[in-house]
Image 1: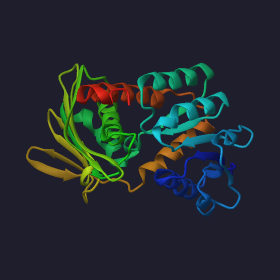
Image 2: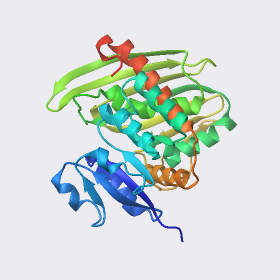
Image 3: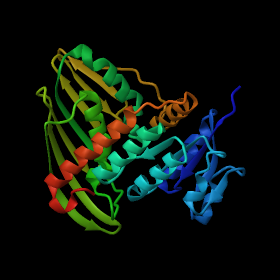
Length: 311
């Protein structure tokens, strides 16, 4: 049996802790190093996991096979650059970066050095979304996508709801349609200050070159929701992560639930990252999509509010 791949994790915040639990649940990987300044972090990880206060000290290719970056997005680019320079494959949480120049720079650096970079658009790994994507072609051309995503929070002082929640839905739209929108617009329909940052509801509209359209409603001022509905020529496919039946296909007036595996998307993402490391993959599909998502989010931010552009 092959030895488990050694992963490093930068960041042990709310989402970083999800990675700690996910890595612990997978036999093909182990958490060998953690970068965190939180003194409580030692309680989260195995006893043999080395902890570093300075994330730069974690990036040792002799001790690691790959790195996960789960820090505030403003730090992603520099951390990815350093991992690439160390020759370490890296999985970067979404949003990939907060401006287009940084996203392209990370992509170009990875390609030039032949280092794998993946972006953690976890909804792309959800079994229901993957089933929807595989089934969609049999129902004809996509006419319209309508999506809703959000929750009561999180409220971040440095990342708007567009970049936080929108990264997932934009990634699904681009991945499913297979093209960049010919037009992208966004409108802030609600905005208010809350204790920990800014609460917003944003409506996003896309038009694609083949005539398909998309409408997204993103909010951190609503009850939790994650719904992605795709109207094709011959059927409506609805992925609803909070419904008992996570994927329903409606055609000819009748709905049909599709059986979906209960594998967690984050576990699938980390497993596929590990598989790519083991295969010495240099596949650029994920990082290229990450760049395109940032390009679209930046365009939407500028349309919604000039002061938000390039965040």
